[in-house]
Image (cartoon, rainbow, N blue to C red; front, side, top):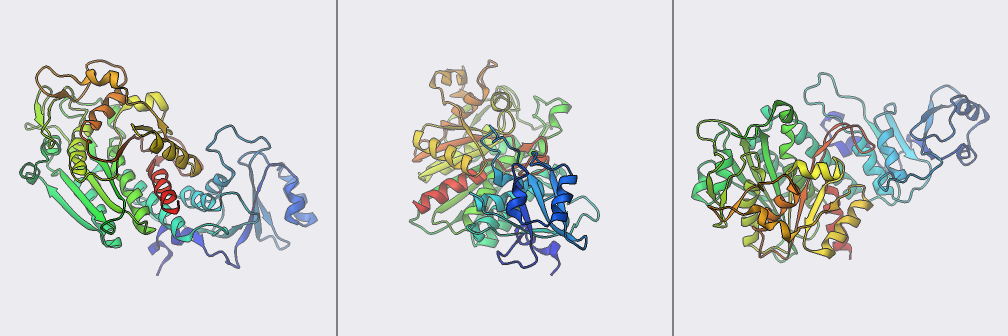
Length: 472
């Protein structure tokens, strides 16, 4: 088997006892050389490079023959104010910068699993359309204390989710999104079904159908179930809009440039499901993906139309570019029919959330204070942060309609993310708890945990939450 045929984690993570692994040091100042046991010549080499532990400066260290003996990476003398800038994340910067080969941490770190995950995520590359992009792997010996199964699951799930987001809509339509769910289902023995095209009307998913009917690529509701009956029930719901033109309320061209990522919520939900199944968490998992392409044609849904939802509530269309909440509403209504203990929805839903919190900090909405605290703490532990925004009841009136039970948008410019979350909450009544995540699903610039491009935000935080509950 070629290295390119292996999973990302299999290519990037080696066994703890890899004899060929070269040491890596993380240093805040020049005193690390005393602990490292470097020769006089090696110390002179490092000094000649001007290395004193400066942040993000690295030095490759030769042995007596000139071959690579190891490397050091600077953390900086000052402890960073950013709570996400953990020392373990430095491995994410090193992974894409080092020569091919095997490496190991020369010293223990406080969070060995996060260090291994950072290595694997920092090494990510999207190579589908690049000729000859199969680089030799750079491998890290698994640090002691890291769970091999969890590390492998997280790296593989995030790589897969990023690939889905980064793939252009020409090759990632509703059918391909379904194919990705089915492939994961086969891998872990899950049951996967789908309702496609006009069958959505026959089986009462009218808003998913309305959003996707203008596209030649049929809309669908994809449904995966896994885990034993009687286990704690959790349902993940993802927005899978393959491409969003805005519909008849068409977006300007500049706003369409990243619309291949409008299925980022589905990719995040799928990544979380991947981690859950790969590690065998004892839950009864359901994954629902509402997938469509919001296109323009003679049969596109229109501003002013009134749609009837699966829940029976009528929705006046104030703007066809607020389509994600429509497809999610039908999927959430289905999820709620089983009254699971937790329902979570993931969506690239509003620009307002980005204005409020920026691209790196997804907005979280929930009425459950304890759940909010758990998710926030879990996200901080694994460097996958979220920030809670309020489900402010005073804004419910923003959704009022003169002709229907509600409008899909507010008629004003304020609190767009809150209004969207309030809209979704109306379709979840029986579940024990509900949390909604408004994501950007894109990294605008390279960081420790990956390059510029698609990102499956919140997936690792949700997995950490559930994993912690299982341990507790």
